[in-house]
Image (tube, rainbow, N blue to C red):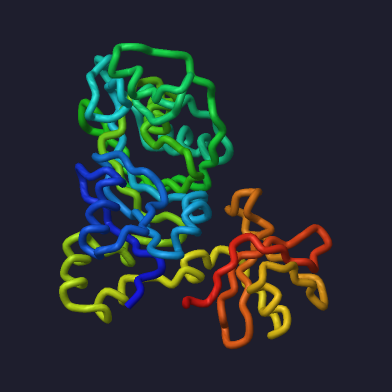
Amino acid sequence: MSLEGVLPIWKPVQFTSHDVVAKARGILKMKRIGHTGTLDPMVTGVLPLCLGRATRLVEYIQEMPKEYEARLVIGLATDTEDLTGKVIEKANKVTVNEPQIHDVMGRFIGVIEQIPPMYSAVKVDGKRLYELARGGEVVERQPRQVSIHSIHILSLKLDVPEPEIVFRVRCSKGTYIRTLCSDIGRALGYPAVMAELVRTGTGGMTRQQCATLEELAEARHQGDAELAQWLIPADQAISFFPAVEVDSVAALHARQGKKIRLAGPVSEQPVLELPEQMRSLKRVYGPGADFLGLFRLEEDGRTLAAEKVFLPEA
């Protein structure tokens, strides 16, 4: 069996995303595996792996919104903005109430600016910020725009010296939840830190679809049929792109990477959370629901140009 598709893995704590890829390569005995977005070692959660030809879809899946559940502690700050860092500020007393918290967190929905934390992989003058931070340097960072699509408070613990907020957030790629926690605390008038983070969804894939590395190893031991149950076909993994069906002649041209001229305009159903540069992409199918690849709809609304062609396997 030739393994191909998207394999959602539940990343364990203390593993980097590259560690998960290395472990999966060992279990599956294949090299062509790519992950769809870096998670810090202390963060657990959904990490889709692309296998075989599906590695060509990494760039699209990783651009899609992410969902997280975070636990925020009010009353202290660290140099890493999470509990792995050194405490650099502590409040003597914290007094917050539920209406105040709802009001403040609601202000963060929409397009906001974040200053990347020093302990991050952002590059400044060719060096990663975390490399500079480990050397004791603090450099000026430019703010970046990110989108917070929704925030829902899951629980509050306010009758303790360091109050806690557990919330779910849906956000764009590149959002630092550590920084969001810190900024929410500042908006409440106190230092704050992210105490825990779980990624519960990415690109439409959820926790329920994920295999642990132990389950993956067991499935491999049981055989291909068991393993296939965890795989999402490549085209289904990018179901956030609208589908277009074409006839056999157009399908032949599509396989050859030629432009396809449709009989009429494609009806547009805007997907609001698709990044701007991906909104004209379509999944194209030939007769028999044969997936031909990703094509970009041109401005005339009738012409499809090849973006990623999926040829039949030899």
